[in-house]
Length: 170
Image (cartoon, rainbow, N blue to C red; front, side):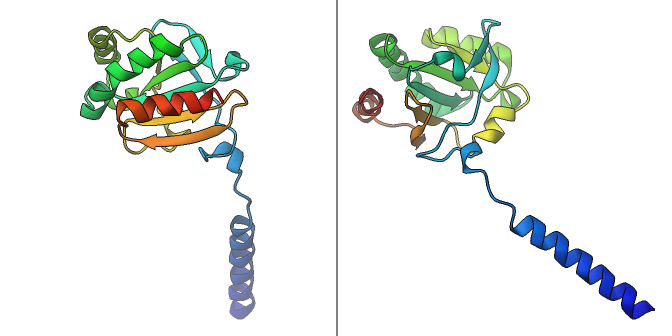
């Protein structure tokens, strides 16, 4: 009797392992170059709702940042400059990793650097988890079809960053 009970437990465990092992990974929900970008639905610092879907055929640069992040402070002026140059053709969403920041600090940062593109607040960290954000800044370059073309960890030099913007327009 004990032997049958033990055998039943082993079979149940093996079945559970087989189910989870063969569960397909939905690459379309991972932030993978060459695949659709995970959806974004966040409220901006301005109180308005923002999604990727509302952009239609416009490419977008999604930048994850925090006000205390030194490299984020280095890249902010360049993102502001590029937005000024490409705002009619490319959108920028600056996603504040608010779980490790404050809304007040994000507001101060935006004012200090003159950020005039949408700042989205990831208060509960859902979008940061979806995009598997570890280091910040992390930037995603998403084409007009919603496909991730490139992922950038850290800060790029100004000419490289501008080249990435130009590539989105091709």
